[in-house]
Image (cartoon, rainbow, N blue to C red; front, side):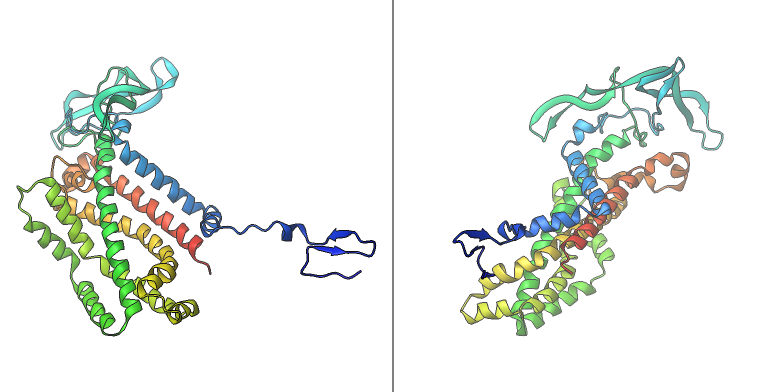
Length: 383
């Protein structure tokens, strides 16, 4: 009996054919690159946690009015503490969560001489889901009054307390996530496009173009970012519309941060431009545009994706810092940085520590994108 190792069927002495190819050889399926990345990424605990939190952040930002239990612009009791939530009332245990409205006790704090507010345990309010509330538009298009949760009596429900104007901090944080995340996403989009294009062109073309381009990049690296943030943001007059002011801040942040990504992309392009398949494409007469788009760009996309997940939290922190100083968002818009302006007085923080709650939104966002970026970096890296 003779066997051809290259044939799946062989002929034996009696004239019959026998299949000698192993099962794994008969049914070979090549997994795509994205499937391989996902298979490795889902084994990362921190990466999956980051992906889950980022998805929840984006969904919450899109449907912030639906999740917010109170009108973010409706004032009530100033500096009201968070409403307690409990399953226990005076009559005993209940399966429906209850909250207790905060009222003034009629006494003053002996140090700050501010009215002391406390929960009204005599009148519990049951929390219900999918309940009516203040009107809004879903995605800015569909009118609705349904909210994820709220109270039966329709009174304000303050999970994280209120600010100095009596506005609900939790609802303002949810609605403010739209501006903070939108600023970060738009800024990172500009950074990615400009940094990737300049890095590709500089690394592939080389020569004088590369030398002059890198000197321009060095100039942007040498710029002191913080003084320029404050100086350039101060150029816009205070009477300018909020949209104009916000657009200018986005352009300033993008202009001062694209150089880092450009330098990283250039380094990877220099290495890829010397690989055999790129030289083979040049030898057969492929244009520079085709080589960059078909052979080099797909090999650096993974690095760019990871860079995006690391740039977004940085831009969120920058926007929060500028908003805290009053240089990012103007009323009536809401952002996390603008909400932190109430935290500029130590005496206020000591008396009303819940006004620091917007910091939690920033911390969760930064942690989420950093965890997602670490998981993607490990999954995408072929080594």
